Length: 240
Image 1: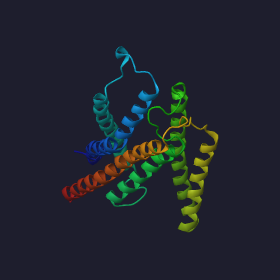
Image 2: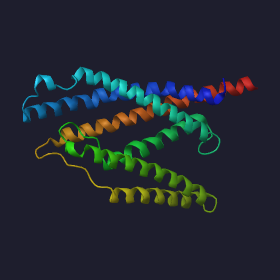
Image 3: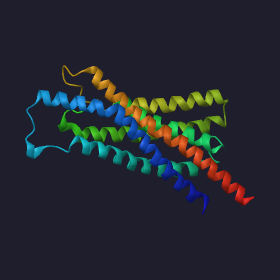
Image 4: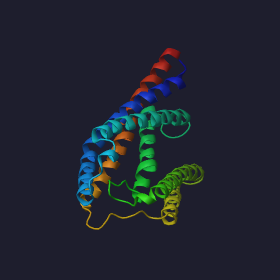
């Protein structure tokens, strides 16, 4: 089996484990907050007619696990693809260290930065009429965050060949932060919580949502780093 194919398959395996870890954290942290938010909505609004009842909570919980597993498979495959492209060219030489660095960077770029501007919100927060524009703003910020990461890497590589590491790192960080700051200023804000909405519920839900992302990327980086290093070591052994 070609080594690149092996790395991609290990990415799928690591993605499954990462999706399971993320769904576990979401189940423990976010699901109880969702139940509280739904209870608040039901207390403040008339009961929903039986014919218009939404998907049951048990069905939603099952869907949560399935969604995280599918997300884990997707990001695991893409993670392995990027890892294979970077290995030996950019970043740490040891496979597990490269996987850790890549996982940390993905969490910051794809989860933390977007969450700072557009954090996740429980049911009852945000105007339903603005779902489409809010989704578009979030995706736009996600693209801007990825572009900021790319600009940071390119600035580092340009400056590192001319300046000491400290100055090169400062320039690269400044380029990335400036790109993100411009996006934060230009993109609109989001709807706030309605008056009287429990602030602890809001922030606990948002913290749990971000923790699920952290679990996803941490588990993916650790699992893939271990699997890829063993696969690469085995490949070198067979070649020798």
